[in-house]
Image 1 (cartoon, rainbow, N blue to C red):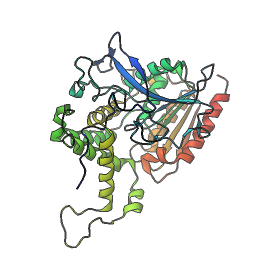
Image 2 (cartoon, rainbow, N blue to C red):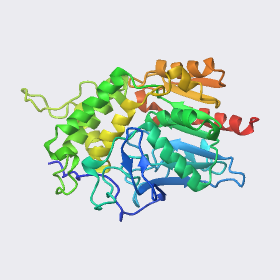
Image 3 (tube, helix red, strand yellow):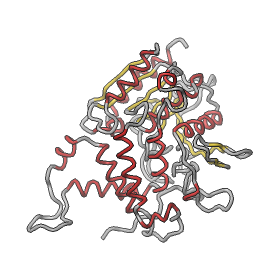
Image 4 (cartoon, rainbow, N blue to C red):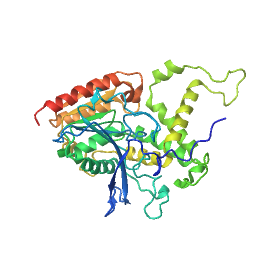
Length: 389
């Protein structure tokens, strides 16, 4: 029998903070979002590693992907449901060496691990925002991250680094704040969401909407087991298929079955089904359905050229040397999209390098191939650090 899943896996005020620190935004006037919505009294959760140099020139911003959070490095426990999502990359003596560089990671606006999002208390009545939370975009996230940069005393990042949704933030930093970034590292991402990417994410959102326990987004007062965990788990199962490659699924699972097939029954499972169910339930324990809706929508809305006179005009604003990385087996964000990023930057005279990571893991290769990714990151950061500015 499956254990009851929580109504939400969101971090709430009063929960152990772990390594989280907090900055405040919009305490005296509303934070107006790109889509016209507004937020007040915004909390921004972030974590840091290492020390900022006296000149403030050694800071690296690491931007997380869809279901990541500010806990990019460190152990699980004490308020953190999982180990750091890039713990193999960030730390003393590691690729992003925290003995050398000051690293910051911010939970994005609309998230569910400390930064204001749908599960957070609304300032008017202190009940969760739920359906009242407005749509956010990647640009809104970056503007909030700029507030954290000011809060920790960083005027200019040595590098802004991130994969997938994090890579979208990296590109927006280059366009929105070119004077505040010395270099950029977008990984496994795109200049604008494609039709197929929108199709995948919108399918996941629909599975959540069709869960009757979603209740239009207002489910936080439900009893354990009575929230939209099934819809969220299903959405994750759909996305998990896109995160890994066909070869990986074939090599790992083949046609192996969970229940013996002796006469056919409708719900007999193959091992790959059990794998997907495991990942669906795992996410439902640590994430929030409404945040999943908001953040996948933000990814679909990602278009560097929107309201900027087109893509060419937007890309011209990026001047920082860049390391662009793709994963050769990536089905969700195929490498032609990273090649397009590199080509667009090169065409505008930017010092850019394109690197392709060899991995059987598909899109998640940027999280799992820590040796390849880490080596490229470390060498690039050293080059930027030593270069004339």
